[in-house]
Amino acid sequence: MARKKSKSKSASFMVFNVNYEDGMVTSNRRVPNELLDQSLGDSLQDLAQTAIQNQDNEIAQRSGQRRAKIKSISLA
Image (cartoon, rainbow, N blue to C red; front, side, top):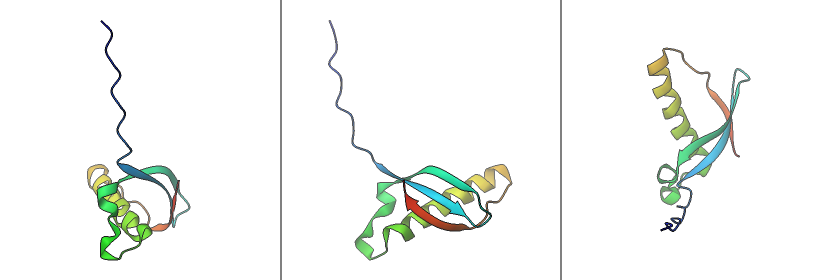
């Protein structure tokens, strides 16, 4: 018997491109939607930047290499 395909879940994240002050660019950085709640009045860009900075800090702790500061963020 063949199984039915399950319905795909909607995306639970948004994707951003990040430019750093040292000229480095990272594409398709995923940020969970629950971290992008604008009900408190913060802009989407500010919330995304905070979430990506937290991701970068966690990566830096593991690798021992610090990333440059974020220059700009845009939706991918």
